[in-house]
Image 1 (cartoon, one colour):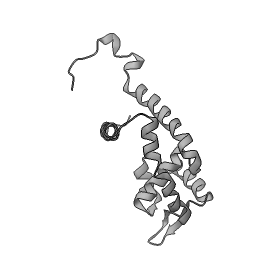
Image 2 (spheres, rainbow, N blue to C red; image 1 turned 90 degrees about the vertical axis):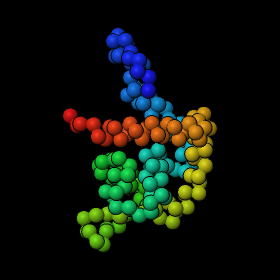
Image 3 (cartoon, rainbow, N blue to C red; image 1 turned 45 degrees about the vertical axis):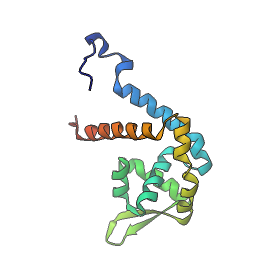
Length: 153
């Protein structure tokens, strides 16, 4: 890691802020997904839900919320829209009546085949190699871990 410290006058420059770069990059990347996900009938947040379910199968709402780092109030309307589209089913957990199990329907599972082209298409649109993606994910994972362990105000 470079030990050089920015001159004090540069510390508060907008273009030097990690949070600004991440916010702009996030909006840019998410908007680039739209034309790729539209043919699948998914928004970006719905795509993330389906990715988690395709990978793990049936999950409790709590498990899905934890995996996606979403609060239940944000996750619930996403799941409702996916359920209305026939892509997921919600059922009461037989072991815990307070818990809901979410799983892909046959239609939802079949959608996975169409989604297989999404990662490569996005790498192409974003001009990223597989190596770039792996490096970027490593840095993002470190940021996520560090942010998760940061003291809450």
